[in-house]
Image (cartoon, rainbow, N blue to C red; front, side, top):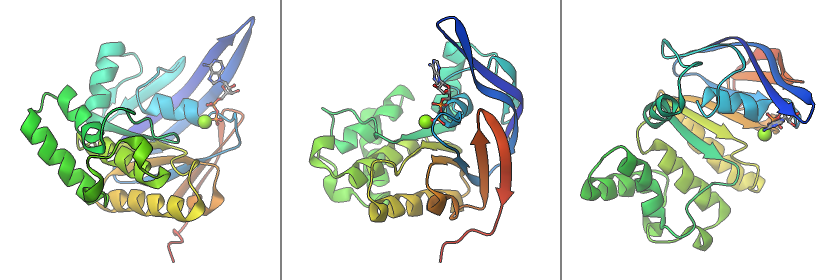
Length: 229
Ligand SMILES: Nc1ncnc2c1ncn2[C@@H]1O[C@H](COP(=O)(O)OP(=O)(O)O)[C@@H](O)[C@H]1O
Ligand SMILES: [Mg+2]
């Protein structure tokens, strides 16, 4: 599904250049779930932004579902994101004035789905993540774990094959974080491709593959039997 070849991402920072990623080669099969692990500043978010077509590499090529997306323009990248990719962020990134239902329905509006159908599908997705009784709550009226469930429902709205999550449990206590990981594992078991950034070795142990970054390079790519005891 994903093929990165010789990927580099440089940032200009004053007079200096920061090599946030260098020489990254990575292949991800359809239906795989993996964690991206590495210390702060190792390039995890930069890599996730590239995978998510939020940014383009300075060097190298990126094929997503057979298509070279490394040289697309902004509008083309936005179209790829809308169809193929669902995002989950550490700080949830929900619209504060909108209800849970409206937050989940929003991507469907961009996809041109009519109002009645949007509401029905968003209600289904909220049921799916266990929040049918919180449809009309705003983010501030929900716990952190509930907000992340809304964000996951929103990520699923356009039924994308690829889910990208950047520290999805970083703002949650360990029990609630574990429930969010359960939900991500469920999406994987349904055949979605899931990439999760984390600092948490315990979370990494629950996925079949762990890619470790250090100083902008892949320094280990491990496959082990997941521990979901
Ligand atoms: N927009 C930017 N401009 C300049 N440097 C950046 C920018 N974004 C990230 N960096 C630098 O790139 C490196 C990798 O950052 P990042 O991908 O955010 O790491 P991580 O997510 O692993 O903490 C860091 O040294 C960071 O300071
Ligand atoms: Mg980061």
